[in-house]
Image (cartoon, rainbow, N blue to C red; front, side, top):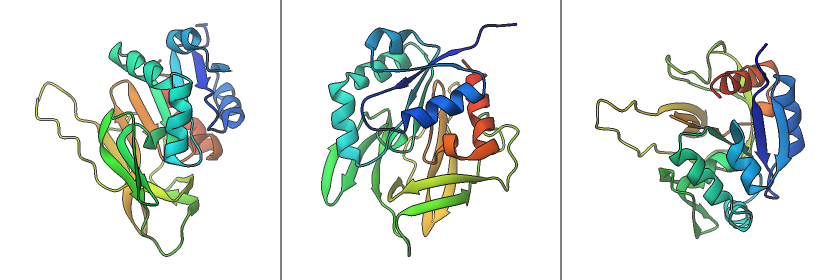
Length: 213
């Protein structure tokens, strides 16, 4: 039997780290919650959670050297997964209450307010995943995932023109308007929803991610 894959849940003060730890352990990962730079760098996978305001998450991440961890892991092709605001901060910028904050800029794009009759978007919703998605492999098209957010990315701006490079696979959801619900881009995967709170469907997603490590 192969050894369990080592996953670090990056603890920078803004995320449901215990929920993520339990969900990852459930699907067989060897999980550690830490902000230690070396442990985060050397793990098979790094999970970056996030709750609250974009600007506060970015401030906490920088204080924990998280932008270095994420950037250097990805430069070496080491897997990283972002969840909720942990996905949003991977984009170039976030705008909340008229204030613009720089993100990690792994992807171009802006996180902005959801325009919907009811905000926040809180509860279960379906998604539209690409047919060739690895993240959603084994997950039925009618499965629902748990969302809690008032901001989202409304436009996917990264264009890949080199035919030798696989274009990112983008999953969408709708609440008042379409928004990016998940992205698979080489070693970098992310979800706007919470797989750790999404029951068996979320567990399958985490299993799929662990299987790539």
